Length: 119
Image 1 (cartoon, rainbow, N blue to C red):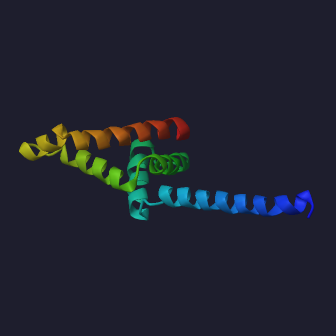
Image 2: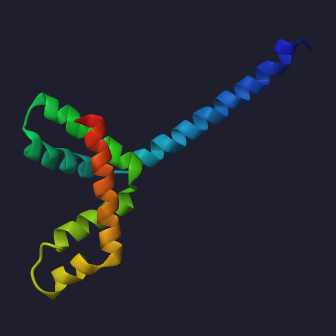
Image 3: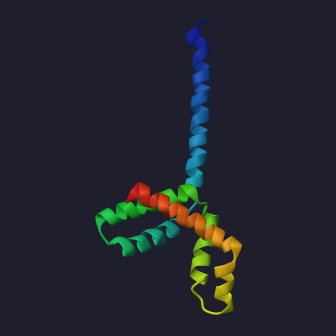
């Protein structure tokens, strides 16, 4: 068997492995439901103008956020941000919770990265 004949199966195996890794990463980055992505883009566009450029930048932004923060962590951060607006004891619990603050900080770091990459 020639060298090319021996290398061909190895190259094919590496290609299959690379495709599997890529598919797994793509699945991780796409675990956000469409409605969550749409809400993010809608809010982003309200803050950045309702233009074609804004929709491109905001769509890019949620893709970057989704690649950095899991959907579960995103929901935790969004809930903490929303509930921290509530006055009284309930709001205080969300403003002072270490878990909530950590999730919010993760989201803010991801949004900062998205800002750099997309805007």
